[in-house]
View 1 (cartoon, one colour):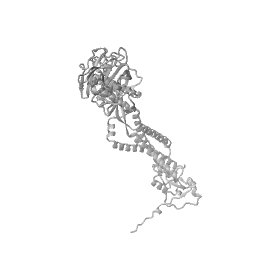
View 2: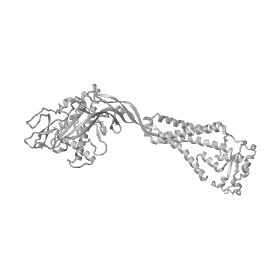
View 3: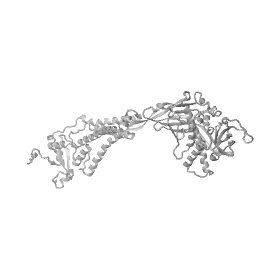
Length: 625
């Protein structure tokens, strides 16, 4: 089988190679007139207005801080892959609407330039690669890297658009959401607490309590929240550098991170309408409370003591002891006190009974606690402790707590069920408890030994000792019991425990107040919800800048090119180039490097041949330039 190839070469006239001067002197009347681009084609690059307007719209959303917690957030979390595909496609389209006008402007400028002056083939190939946004490695190295740089530059808009369109997860803030918090009741005196009953009625006949699905609430913490009080004592100090984490005394599962400062009772109780908001994360509000500051010392001259009142006849029967005495700032009124006097051994002081196994006149396992209400305008609230040999570290310790009215910011996390309370420094607030009723009931919680028995061990003493060991671990102090550093740890740990009792008791009393309609007040909370915003600010500003600059470049270029001649001839189109050569509309001008170099060698079709750069191209028109 043979293949016959027909020779069409005789049908075409060869393109003559001429000199530059000959081109200038050629009769233009014999060359067909090249068409000019119509006016509307010069408006096509204004399609850059589309990405410019879109970028300005997104920027406006950012300035107005628009964030969505509804449909867009749901799509962004449920269909992340689909959203990314959509963003990629849209970014490519908007990026192309920037690249296309840029390449079109360059094409129009170079075609206008080509009709006025000849350019060498390397330059023409460079223009062709740039207008088509491609790299041409057949060019010399400098123009080749120029085409690569332009190609990379044209990919930047799509990349920036991807960052400007991708939904970014953030938070939205909703203000002025009503929230009920504890108050002092209708008269602001905390009358519902009935504080004066505690020091005369250990059984708690006047106590009230209510049990709901979210917990048990009472105004008698010492008798109905004994376990929680002991837990507060034992966990007041953190054994490491992390803040103390402790739960509320209810069933809401909320935990305080750090000190509660006696506020934050509303978390989990009156915030259900906030928790029902879509995608809510946390909320914050301000609440007035007390910053309890406790100092602790060893008072060797303390008037507190334990008296071995009655020794049983049989060793298997516990001994009776009387805890009696007074604190420095007041005559403490003991529960069931009768000013009992027995001979000259017991001064006429109030007392309360304790039972334990002991030897002789001293006991090993008793820890008795005392508290007192300040007299007149004294702001000091005094607490003391007397203990047996087994808890001798606690014996004769005395503490003073000052309640400073303060403003606090409460941050409640719905997602993590945590509460963080921060004191607002230098905020001036009034006394939220001018009658001292609230503080009196909270301070009454310290009298744990009134209702806990001491036989083989003291639960109160063990709780204090547990917290001492926590602080020992934190500070790595393992010295002898008589060492000053160890005594410092004991005093600091006990001070932490007393402060913890005050803080947690105030929260529990506040929670009880929230069960009463006339013991609450309304504050405004700020709610933070999960949301998305369109793009990141840096990328949004970037696309705005490049699109505004691109639009400015397009408008400026066409103000110049509007009346200028832009031939319809497209040099990057191989068909246009061949037809122009055949019909004489494209002149091949020999470069000066060839004229003195002994002529051209045969070309083997290699696009890297340096002889290609020895020719220049110019469009021939029937108009004299």
